[in-house]
Length: 336
Figure 1 (cartoon, rainbow, N blue to C red):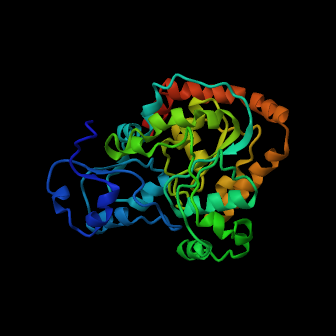
Figure 2 (figure 1 turned 30 degrees about the vertical axis):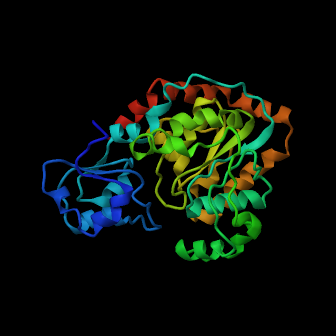
Figure 3 (figure 1 turned 60 degrees about the horizontal axis):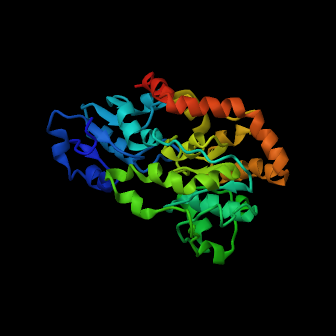
């Protein structure tokens, strides 16, 4: 596929135009409809505005998406002829680190790193909770956005949550919330994001700026796109740790880790991490459970971290080889 010039590709900037019926020519040719990126995510009932629109107009064309579609979603999306395009997903997010050859030595000087780029509810929750738990180290954690003191109530309303008690686990420090935290040296380079269409090079080049933060940190807490959504959308971000032979856990959508294991073939680090948080649907409760699980490791010594790392060495090497051997592609193609 030539991903620079694909007919009928619906990109994020065109979602609203598409569902407002302003792109009728997408239906008047022989090409399939290509749904690029996360489609704005899914609500708690697994509704999505783009998919709902396609169902409403009785679309009978083949539809390709980046989402791997579970049996449950196939039933919900019936009778649409929709399937994952592994080539689309690989070209959009996954393949661009096959040329990565450097590997700084694992040498712990820090407990946790987390890179939080553009603002969304999930990243607001994650960074705020990290701050509340005392885990937001400005040398190793970024927050490239400002929110403000009323952000929690806005999120509660938007995700239709009634769990006000849960808000005690998020900072109310307005000085933190209303400021961004950008790495001053060896950090994210925004100039690299626009060098190819659709941001394809963002991960590929910025890994060289972030690799030392990863290899100096015991755990990388991955900040997934649309982590406040309700159906897993997998991006390149967890690969930061895979290719630098590190440990990671992800604040993603419910069942994110089991989804990555089943459909992409990457193993969990379940000798040391408790993944029960991954089953929690409410995004606020899920991030609190996740950070509570991780926090206990912060109380250990560097020697303890190294011992835990060694306990997962077989899984770390398996995931590394699984990526560079294209094993994840073979696994994904079973579900095309």
